[in-house]
Image 1 (spheres, rainbow, N blue to C red):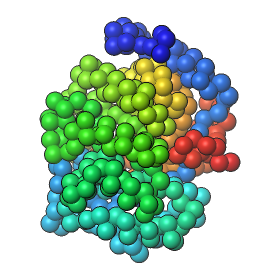
Image 2 (cartoon, one colour; image 1 turned 60 degrees about the vertical axis):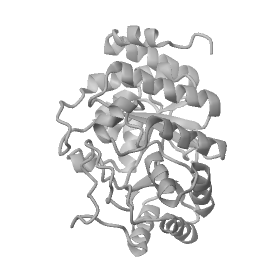
Image 3 (tube, rainbow, N blue to C red; image 1 turned 45 degrees about the vertical axis):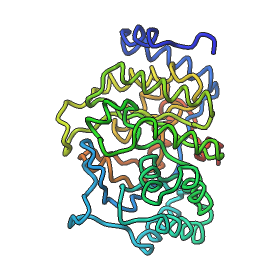
Length: 341
């Protein structure tokens, strides 16, 4: 692609101040999305289990097998949560859990079939790559076989969770039992090949270097060149409280700078999402001038970030107000960014 940023270019841009970098990113955002629209989705995060053998050092949410606080949602509990979501205007579930060794493929297909039978109007955006790799290994299936079975049972798209930083040396320090960077990429490339859309994410601000962040962006950009299956990129900052990684939280200035750099570097990913869940509503609003064109989701329920003590909540009316007060028109969207209002 002509005029594509190199790592050297990105390093030079990183030396700029937050306002100069933001101005560049906002111009790039307006070039791609000239209409004054900011999108969002009305959904709910449902964590079907918190039991996980990964033991990631950055996670305050999981519980090991046998722990008194471990749970697996029953179908009745799941139905109650989805019914409430629909009543509040939601039309998508972000369905994620842990790497639970007691849950086989039958559990997942039964859960998906149940959701689609009871709530055919609900889209299921579920099961991050680490969950899919773990399930495939547990069942002795290929990634393609596993994703195909889940898709036929009702899985519509795959979220980009579990990416953290796509550098194995970093992953070995913070999540040694989770899938490798190559496996994460393979899940996404396989899903794209099967016609499923996915998102891409990055959790930064823990033990990684700036070069590690650029390696992550390169891997996402390279896969998008090959497959075109990512609909959006969502970077967010590591929340250190209640975790095993003791480091100061990344500043909002650094978040905005990296968000802007992501917009400029990922020239083949159309949508960049603001992370108000970790940054709060006002920085989320500022992000709309630092490269983001999407405000994420209403997130009627969120447990993983909340377990670190970071508990931002916004009703849909508040999200629309924040977007409108920034000078944009709020518009509901689907996962693939089709407008739905």
